[in-house]
Image (cartoon, rainbow, N blue to C red; front, side, top):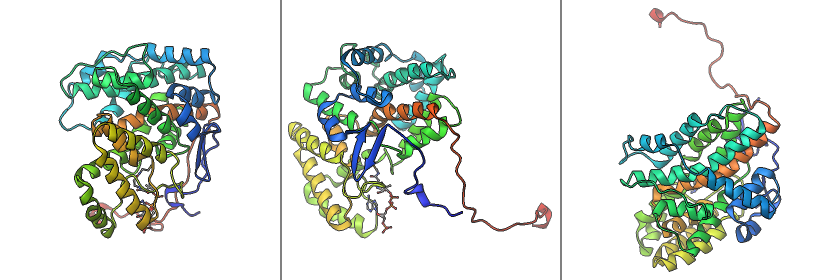
Length: 371
Ligand SMILES: CC(C)(COP(=O)(O)OP(=O)(O)OC[C@H]1O[C@@H](n2cnc3c(N)ncnc32)[C@H](O)[C@@H]1OP(=O)(O)O)[C@@H](O)C(=O)NCCC(=O)NCCS
């Protein structure tokens, strides 16, 4: 029995939700390029949860259900106000708040498929409100109620900033949500599946997944990319900063991937958006710096950019606080986590692998007085 470090190459589940084959990402067989160019985030949620695209009335119904379920318990907002707001990371606040949503959901432990689907809708609807409410509370502002007539993407930006976003902002944000929605058996999705395979509830599965996404090797990378861009500060500093990191064998956030070899198909979409939005907001240097970093890493390390690299400058251009980048990833990925949780329940078996034991051989207990 020998271990495969990081479970690399191990096929740990069957899934109909998304696939990565030869560097092509599909959701239920639809190429991510096709979806990014044509589908709304709500359509993608439906696709992931039903493994087919919705008809017009089905999409309208889902939008209505999401709009009807966006409000969150006042107790969550009140609890935010008790946090050490100058230091707490929004991902920690989100992890706790999603757990708390489960406390307030009377159906949390009702495990039939209909109840689990209702919880999926409630969770997807409320997570946008949780993130935006926290973002406002920590600035001493009151949360903003969603507007039922706005799309999911538009509502998020509206609840965050208190003013209706421009069409181009909604378009970019919606596309970013589509691109982050699912990604086969990534670390947080696997975490969610392991959790619910014990027949634990949907809220526990998503809370566990948020904990996994938080790490800088996974969803936390987008915030780190922005930290790096901020530290570099200008185009002329890129070369020395990156070369120094490479010489010290440090990882550059936003590059490399466990599965993709030639490149992450989501990155080019975000790159185009980054160029467009940084020009519009008068910060083209951010894009130029990103391209220069990209070219250096590709040339020297042969590592392609992943989804997190250009999403950093996209979100920054939308005026979003940098530590909200990973929570936004969670808002989108909730759709994928929930799809995988429902798929796991539908054909469940406890996930319980083995470990290769590399400790000492059999030992005899020595009384504490003789050690
Ligand atoms: C994504 C990631 C965790 C995949 O990890 P992995 O498959 O376990 O690959 P490893 O970390 O073992 O890296 C393999 C080699 O590539 C190098 N490498 C991988 N990513 C690198 C990066 N971003 N910058 C510099 N070198 C990197 C490693 O140092 C290692 O080199 P070595 O063999 O000389 O020691 C890894 O590429 C990474 O840490 N990237 C940065 C974080 C990030 O952007 N995460 C978001 C992923 S969507």
